[in-house]
Image 1 (cartoon, rainbow, N blue to C red):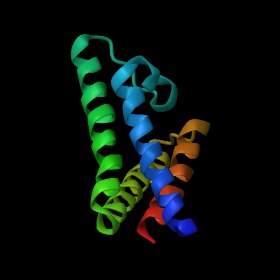
Image 2 (image 1 turned 180 degrees about the vertical axis):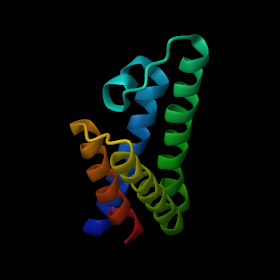
Image 3 (image 1 turned 90 degrees about the horizontal axis):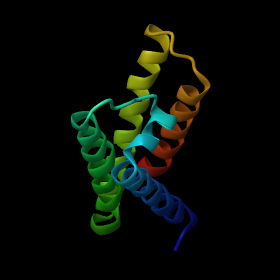
Image 4 (image 1 turned 45 degrees about the vertical axis):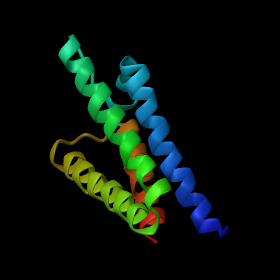
Length: 113
């Protein structure tokens, strides 16, 4: 198994882990997103979008292979572009936002290669 494939698998597993955290403990999402759900409807959205969607996005490449890894990479790069837009236009230069941007770019590039 080559080194790049190992990095891609780690990226997919990290995506799944993020989803599992949001699914199992949605209140933990506040620490790395700044989103806080005040009611059960918000908790449901965190569990489904940050939980279910991230679990599915991370699991797909493990079953489908190359094209799905690239799809996940494009997803991370699209998130990074939207985040960069927000950083510039909303002046949201908090450290956690910049860290997230860096992680999304690195994972996106690894997964697209």
